[in-house]
Length: 191
Image (cartoon, rainbow, N blue to C red; front, side):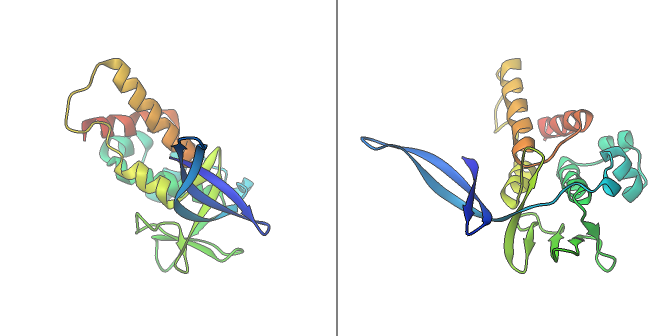
């Protein structure tokens, strides 16, 4: 499955699609899930910040302490918050689990995992870095398990799984710092 952006009446929409081979007809794409309208927000110079500085600013914690004492699920959620913050979203004063971008009247509810990027009941996606930040990507990252009841088949298997996890971050529009990726990989490895 992969993500595909489609333009309809000067607006872009994101879909999760899958290629199917049909005998005599070749490859056909089948839409598996609609992911919402795509928004593109530039990173604001004022909010250009490293992940480590973001953590210190919002949690008053150093990166090393944070990585050693935080679950992978929370780290991924904080990476999403960081990406949104860089795109001009700010934390709502009344509810710290909501981030808003006032100009476009777009809000994100960080309490919800499956419907995190949802406004007025409609899912949306954000074009970010080399991918798209969207509900499916975030949910997939949070729920991803490196191994399913069994033993590793050596270093090659671990490398392939690590590359898959890295690809998921890239496709999900999250530019994860190297040391944070290593910590998330290790935590998922031990889960």
